[in-house]
Length: 323
Ligand code: 8YV
Image 1 (cartoon, rainbow, N blue to C red):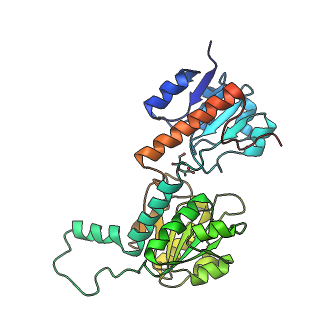
Image 2 (image 1 turned 45 degrees about the vertical axis):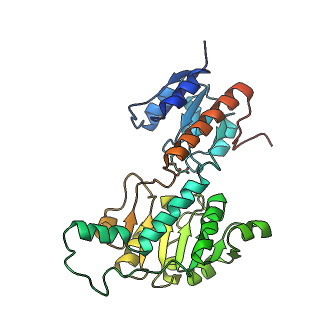
Image 3 (image 1 turned 30 degrees about the horizontal axis):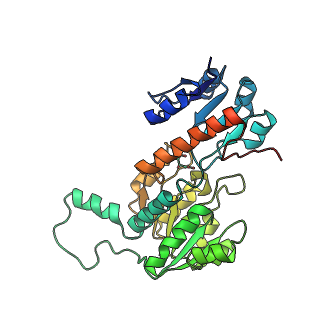
């Protein structure tokens, strides 16, 4: 008998085939969203799970599934997983770093450009039949080239975003928990390490790519928005809770900043309905890593972690290895 695992969400069929070589696989190709109670019930008798960022892995769940040995998450961000609780319950946890850096950086640029240059807003206007003549002041946006790019969270994705700014002759300032090495700063278009306040005051375009935690909750709230330039753009690729939605909605409504591009929301797939009434916000459904190749790479990396963890006791992207 092969050991049993659960794949919590629909996934590429080839990844299920790979897992089936090692495990008895309970899959969820109908993509039902399990409640915490249902997730716990389905994890009973399973040694491992391939999950996504929508699964909450916490003490309450882990207490109900003593046989679980590993959770392999298909995401780089792992704020949904209580890693110390996993360690306390002897559960290995892994994520999928690296494979999505470049694709997420590409999308960061797509969202920044669309937001600064009002791409979706003008398209909606055109589709609604309003385009009857050219005007000198139609959809004036903010320049990207030659501007100052501020990146909060200068991990691998932040550095990939910064590197792309070379082609736009931009100056890059960044804020991070720690300063990068000189070599990393050079790679990231000679990014300058500044305080969060300096970054907000200097940047024409602010991009958020930091991990979510209690410490980063509402990194951008009313006080921070008030420090930004009136013509500035804010892009959030990280997690919804990093921005205070109420404060952002007020700032956008009063044009205290020019525009925002948001790929993530605090209670997604739900989001604050007031965003829909604002023309100066670009809203996308958490698709920064969604290229065909990258989602396949993420799914395979999560599966490989699960296989390595459960067969060799050593997943490649182990979040809680023994000290
Ligand atoms: C995922 C992400 O699409 O990797 C992450 O942290 O936010 C996205 O790439 C999503 O979390 C699915 O698990």
